[in-house]
Image 1: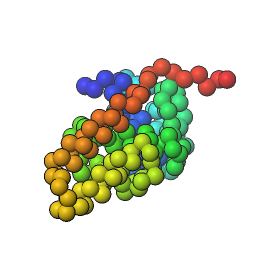
Image 2: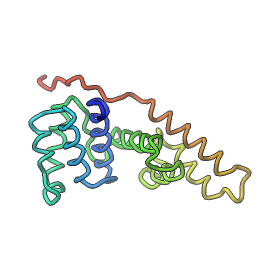
Image 3: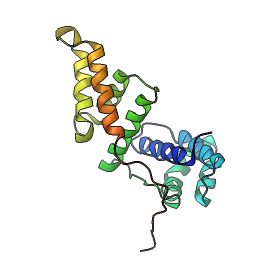
Image 4: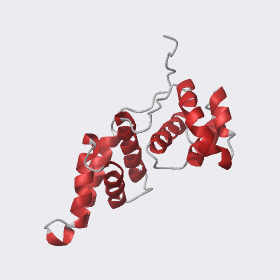
Length: 169
C-alpha cells in the first residue's frame, strides 16, 4: 500500500493537472478516495471523496482548495504560474514512473505550455527536436535521454510536505 506522503503527493499532482485542464474532476475524486483509504483525513477530503461522477465537475472546484488546505497541501489557482509549474513537475513524475514516454512528456509540455513556461522550456524545445529528427544529426534515443534528464531535474523540485499550514493569521 502506498504511503500517506506518496498519496498526498499524488493528490496534489492531480490537483495541479486538474487546474490546467489536464485531467477530469473525477480523477481528483478518485485520488481523494485513495488518500482516505490510506489514512489521510479531513472533513472536506471526506466530502470530496463522496462526490459522484455527475457531481465531480461541479463540486471539485469548490471542495478541492479547502481539502488541500486542511491537509497542509498547496492549491494552485487556475492558470497561475505556480500551478503550471506544479503541473509540469507532475507530468515529469508521470514519465519517470513509466506512465508515458519521453516523447509524450515533451509533447504534453509543449501542448499545454508552449514555450511560455521557463521551468519547462527545454522540454518544449525537445518536442520540436523530435519533429526534425530525420533532418538532424541526433537520434530519438539521444533526445529521449535529454527529455529524461529534464524530467529528473523537474522532479527534483520541492516535495509535498504533510506539515499543516497555518491559515489563521
